[in-house]
View 1 (cartoon, rainbow, N blue to C red):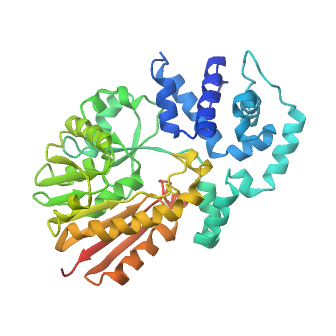
View 2 (cartoon, rainbow, N blue to C red):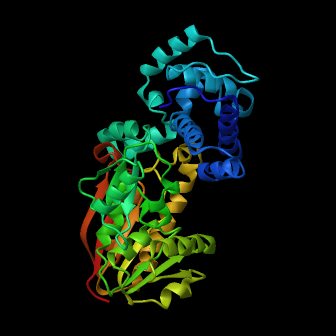
Length: 404
């Protein structure tokens, strides 16, 4: 947490970012991009703004309760929320030109009241708590608490250029402290407050910032040099680049997505990473998938999902229309698993993955698929728990095609 209050200008930026997210429905990463572009902010101050904004969104209903405002009043009463936030964390009140003051005695009372309401204290909206209890039962409470905490920073060593130990040594020379992550051979946890993307190691393509749980998804694919591998929901390509490293740059790696701009971004990252075996292809229609029937040794289906396993990192998702979107997302997941799995050859492996911790998006989808597709078998599956691992939450299932 901060050790000093935000400046007046930084407080105004936080309020503006929160207003854009909560009133205009913009994703948090786009709100950051729009507000930070063109500003001459030093990395440390940008990090302080992001830390404050992220913490507020992770427990938005708690801080609004303490400040006695509603989220849709952020533009008018955001200064009161920022004052309450600073006092809650034991910081001096920030200096702002226009500032709505907080009654400190009343704030102390409301803090004590909030402590008796675990759902509120964890910053959990009511709809999510109801769904969490339905999906996870008694284990939901520990997951709910874990998802209210700040995410750790993890790196993936780019195996095309460097080993994990070599990367750790190079980063140490650039004053970046790291720890090896047990159980994830490619992962380092960053333990210092460092501007990672300004390091020479990043410019040289020696690492990508990627959660350790996410790294386990691509690792489960077990791609080998010389194989034909398809990442069918590649997005901007974090897992694609991990697969390229597994393949040692040998073989054919096809990254596919329905949005061209994401694939363009992937191409840039692939060049920096030295991942020269990556090809990109837009999924223009169902014909794109049909042409690849029974052609791949491995297929990764990192499907669109609710994102409820990565709320530490993307806390704005809690305050969107997830309840209404979930049935639509689940239909899309079912379609992708049924249709895109046709691309794997007999003896090949499909990995179905989400960044959700809810069984309805995970094992429930896999069981329904297997019931309708006896030509596949489940090898194994894994749920990565934020509470137990300290990582983001993910699910993965390895499926083998046993016949056409």
